[in-house]
Image (cartoon, rainbow, N blue to C red):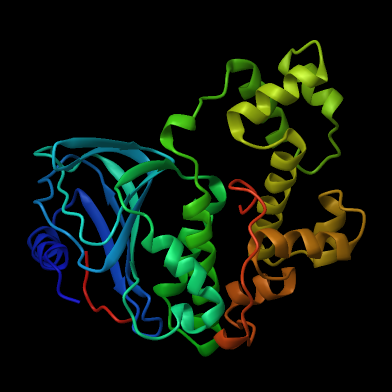
Length: 329
């Protein structure tokens, strides 16, 4: 797929490939045609901006982990910051609005929506294709932690040798990313945690391996009533404190599984789950793989699961989820 954007970025990356201020990588994925390319870049100082371009029939999504960037679409200016994403539907021409490429860390991917085959190789995903095609205008949305983590794993998979099982996981995660993108709230819904909530979040991080009830969270945050703390937390973070705490426990579990020094049972008990089965069920709901499959994936022995057997993904809330092309960004 030789779109203007693709040609621009090939020239841009070639011109600046040896400069010390940028570390970047873009990967074409021929094994999964819907994933035109996926990449990750760290800009350590401002540099030449993007000329006007489009992506033909592909949807591009840029997810900023940190930094800030201005984009221009006709007479509209879009400002995207850390933990936010910007999406450009097929055929929409955009640029950096005569602004330089700012200091930032960004992941991006291009999703092909024009292929003749069933979306992601399975007709059950056709509704997802139709929903993504219905995104008619560029916009900035919040990028919840689950979406960011899933995209990082997508990039990790795409930059390694792809076994049939890895391609299956790649397709599953791309489908999950599509659902997460559709569920991501608009930037206007984003609110920064108050100092009181920040105290509670720090305490929850420190106590992630211990039991922690709503009463203690409320006390640390300095609220007089649990109901007031619950309402403030939900309004700011889009989920309950218990839900956030459970997600953080499962993120910690993933770190321990990647470390590989503890058994699944030991990890389950250390994080306060009532049983290994309860832990496995919760972990798979958030990470799409069982604890043993997840650990094996990071050791190198991915589970065998053909793409045609993947079922439609169920995404309870925006916050609970946490190679046709050969181009490069």
